[in-house]
Amino acid sequence: MQKNKLKELWSKGRPALNGWCSIGNPFTAEIMAAQGYDSITVDVQHGALDYGDALPMFQAMRASGAVLMARVPWRDPAYIMKCLDAGAMGIICPMVNTADEAAEFVSYMRYPPHGQRSFGPTRAAVAMPGYGVAANQETLAFAMIETAEGMENLEEIARTPGLDGLYVGPADLTLGTQNGRLKPGFDREEEEMVTLIRRIAQVCEDHGLKAGLHCGTPDYAAKAIRWGYHLTTVSGDSRLLATAAQSSVSKWRELTGNRTKPTPNGGPY
Image (cartoon, rainbow, N blue to C red):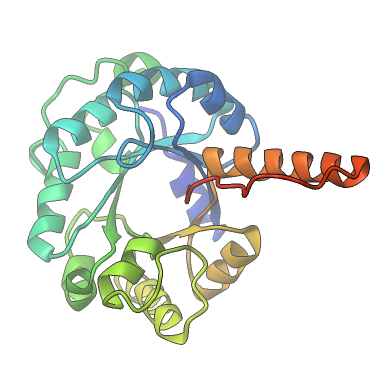
């Protein structure tokens, strides 16, 4: 059974850089995976893709050696198990608000006797010879903390047996805790948001979990690592494409004196 390279990285005290794929295309995924990320997450929740796109994306990224993960649409056993069967070595599950929900999520990740995952690793068995019950020890279960309820139950969620980490979605965490006072977005600098983000990292440290954070820039990700985060996502394929295209267009217009341009919009990811 293939070992999870993120676990090996963390055992050496090193943080991990996670890439993010929201475009449902194997070639785009292959390009992202070739850039040296430690792991790549396929966003099946908000990405412009579904399971039929995710599987060939995993296939295209296999040669990179990056740890392949998926953010599933919900705490849905069908999607969680199918993504694992497709070869995901980690699952990020959104909107986990209670310890019971965390335990339910973990149960879908593990084969009996540690969970209720059904056996049928169609692609995983091909991509990872020897795949079987040993996957219980290698697949990572990350619960997303995104709401006021999740923050209220943070300690109880962190005590869930079999949970590997907590992943912070700053946009939804802002929406869920600030009652519309702040706009959603990444790289929060407001004192109240920084306090919440740092508290999650501390709770992870207290309970032996790995803390993950979605970031917009490398600078903020580096700061998050100093706060105790073990895995940071820096932007993603759609946002990186938009940023690079915007930079190229702006430079051309500057050099040619043709400065009329539309307002760029690359989306949150």
